[in-house]
Length: 198
Image 1 (spheres, rainbow, N blue to C red):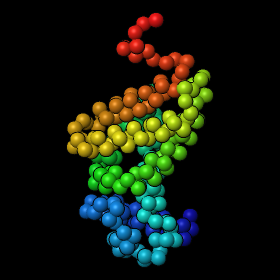
Image 2 (image 1 turned 90 degrees about the vertical axis):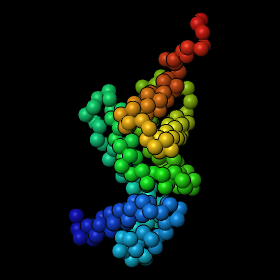
Image 3 (image 1 turned 45 degrees about the vertical axis):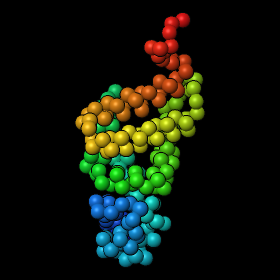
């Protein structure tokens, strides 16, 4: 890697760190690009050589976080998604101010949902061959999973992390991952207790 690449990475790292730290004291909507560059001790114009705006910077932070979380539980076999859920809610617990701040921003939350939905949709498409006859389009499954996850995080924060991380990981795995896949698999649909018998 040449020096220019190292400078680019360092600048981006400082900008990300500054934005995350600023959410400890200010609402996401109130943070300006000037706040970020001043906090990072980087020139205002330099910011726009790297990002189009504050939302692009925050989306990169979350994309890297999601990529890192997904790369960690690879050795856990059939407990992959529960471990993924543990890492996810551990990150929420360690960055409560950040998550509370962005969830209060309807504009950014919508962008985050749309951005993450595309990532999830690619993952589902990579495994959809295991479902003989999907009950609904992959895009709807991705939309549901991401919206449910955002809602679950929002609920947990609103209730002051009332459940431990382990339980949230289990809820994530069963309600969002298993629940969505069972619903998509029309050939092996679950019969609910109140549906009676044939």
